[in-house]
Image (cartoon, rainbow, N blue to C red; front, side, top):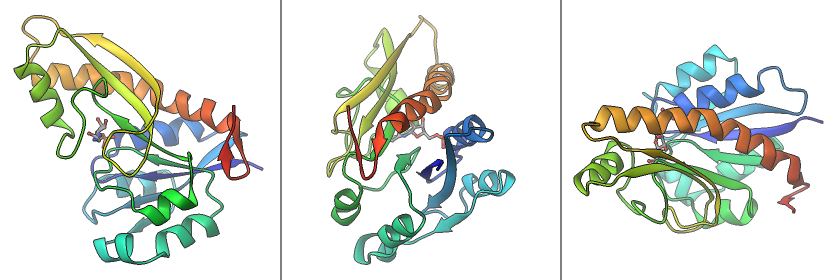
Length: 197
Ligand code: GAR
């Protein structure tokens, strides 16, 4: 049976798009569900384009009910992927999917992570500090922002004169290139309800 991926995203969903493209013709896995807290998120249009079902939820449903856990279980989701999703994951979800929730972050964690560090804010902080390199981090999710065990990192150089758009572009290129492949490799290790070595 194909492994089943659920993606949480709050915004544009360019990573979600790359992941859906990557698995569109896969025999081994599929994107089965897109979830978002933002009814205006462009990721919903992308889900429609790929004929992937989606679910919009609000804070109450996410933090004060078991609806999301029940939905993911009902859909037999094997791996939960956060791709530009900005809310902290609640305990019931972490418990239901131990070591089966991963996130992508646009910096080399543990640097430039934590609450409030997302999207352009991360790149701007990196530029303000005149860093000479940046990168991306894919990591397991725990109860803190950006602190779970690191699965994969990739780096790029920041050249003199690189502006916010350029740094963001270089990071996005790396995300799009690596995230689907890292997911594919992780799925090979998914066994029942946990990832094994
Ligand atoms: C990505 O760059 C991702 O790393 C970042 O949000 C962007 C979403 O882009 N995530 C965070 O900053 C999490 N702290 P997308 O909607 O185009 O995939």
